[in-house]
Length: 392
Image 1 (cartoon, helix red, strand yellow):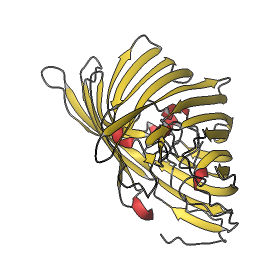
Image 2 (image 1 turned 180 degrees about the vertical axis):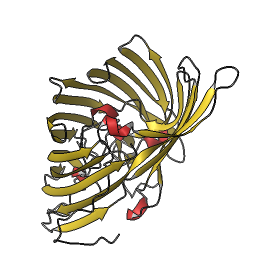
Image 3 (image 1 turned 180 degrees about the horizontal axis):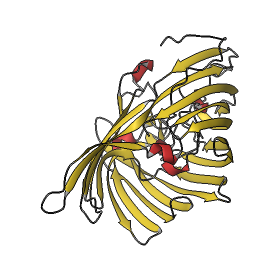
Image 4 (image 1 turned 120 degrees about the horizontal axis):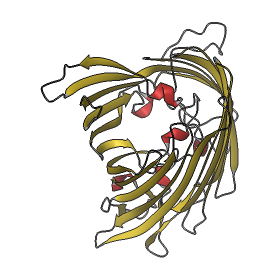
């Protein structure tokens, strides 16, 4: 993608918003169709959501991931090489439909959303969400029930805190509202999202999709202040030519957001488990749920610990900043190879100017570090210049 480069490298290609903007932006929508109520008081409506996003990024070290900071993708051994990258791939478009009765009930709804994060660095459309809801049931692809999308603050980076539990999955979910402040949800999710590392010299073994992943999540609080506690069972299924095998992974999560004033809030999250790395925002699909041990002729689930803290402050109605720190550690197993990541962390700070409700612009600095099981380390620093324009 070509951009005009006036006033040097640092002039951004302003146009939008980031993947994980504040909830007010994520919920912005425009109603495009609204039918008249029928004889039963039922009516249909359709709405559009989304934003256009553009980034200008300056990296001071070589990293594998471009659109967002991914600490495990930092090149080892470290290569100090400056490079720039311009992108509009985080732009999103969503279309929703819902059936509403005069009393406000919405028993049936559907939603589909794409971004432009295509394979191999292209801007080909990619499905993010596609699901339908009927009363208390949800069927389709959206954020895993073991995820917490509410934890993300007003940032521009595509991934944010690398230790966060945030992953999309095809699922069947049931949600029960226990009280005005309490909800409880359970889901069965796509077992194909589990990933494991198998040595190339053992092609007779392969991962197998068989037993669904089970999750449960309890939420207490209101729209601003809340706490969540969740758990998951993640069966790791694999096979050879003769038989199939299953190892059971597990995980737990605690997540919360607390506004100490109208201008300041803190967000914290911690998670731990074995065989559940698929839920991590940067480890999903990277083979960290389990590793195959040729000596024992079996798969071994890997433990993973994550912790992150976020602080957001509004200097004025138009100016805000976010600071965060995230740390993750993968447990040792004799079957892991030296090139696999042992621990990684990242920290960031930004300054965002929001002159209008649907327009943001600002700068963000992000530092990340990674260390593999061979005890080799690398770190990287990125400056990101972004802007945002949402539909509403």
